[in-house]
Length: 160
Image (cartoon, rainbow, N blue to C red; front, side, top):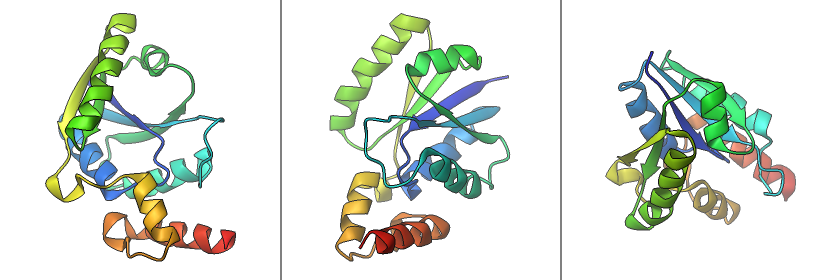
């Protein structure tokens, strides 16, 4: 079975994330969307909330499952018999950082990283930017799945 992991914080999951996940699902027998647990990072949504949102929005792809990890991604890959990491690239600036990570991961474990360019309509979309624009009342509905959009607006309303 060809398995890959799409790691990230997914705070919140965007249409850009889903673009990469959906395309990876066409290439692999199973794709694990793995939410990074980073206790030092201040997230808008808990890991469980992010996993719930992801489970809902990946339903079109029956070969996509949701997981979480902390520590080294390559340890997660080894523990789950995953041989490939799929990373979306929005711009050349992403590549500079991701190439170093890919080389380190390959050296540590033999796990290869495959880079997938995002579709042009999502090349500027990041969870951080979406949250910032939404905080100031900007329209971000077209950048998120409907269910995630509702949850994001609800969470921001709770905090104001």
